[in-house]
Image (cartoon, rainbow, N blue to C red; front, top):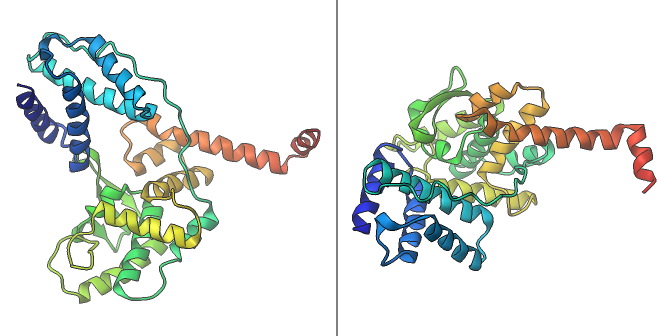
Length: 297
């Protein structure tokens, strides 16, 4: 019975939610863990106490709060689906509260570090041109790594310097790209054309197939380490850097929301905290009274 319900849930996620393979994998893992924990229990009789017991087990395993919160969110979606489809009479996850999570500010690069990273792929062979184009595009457009990996030849308007991005749940948006990034993309495209590969994918791996999300992450991590920025830098860091630098430059928050493809402005507002931190740092360094106060300690 549980296998049947899980399969129906996966179908729902694929068809109605249009979830990516990565997201599907996470949902299946989380629901599977709960079903293993609740083995032997009647699905229709599971209540909030059982779900809290599962969360307590996760805490005993010393899982991070963010991981526990994600698994609870998965169970809410799962039981909401079962309730909607009439498999159960009530949603037992509805009344289970989410653990309070820390809200770390997104990491971003300084302008100097970003420029150093963009210039790290040196040379004019296929790999160097491709890697430079990827780094420039991530920083210049704020695209998600999945959006860059899914780009096709027809998605980049070289004349207008625009990119058509396919975001979450297959939502499309048009994103402008800066001149330096477009120049890097143009040089890569010339080299890619010379290879005469039949693939519609824009960014290719060494074998001529589509470069994956994981492949792009490896590229970013590789050059971040070469620059000496650190191991915790990835494609999403460049997305955060894009948004933060725009905000520092005076860009409107709603415009940044559109560029990032956020469904809600509240998601974009986390960058205002970064901006405030930047302003406070500037104040502490520049204001005479700030210096006087700091000198007393």
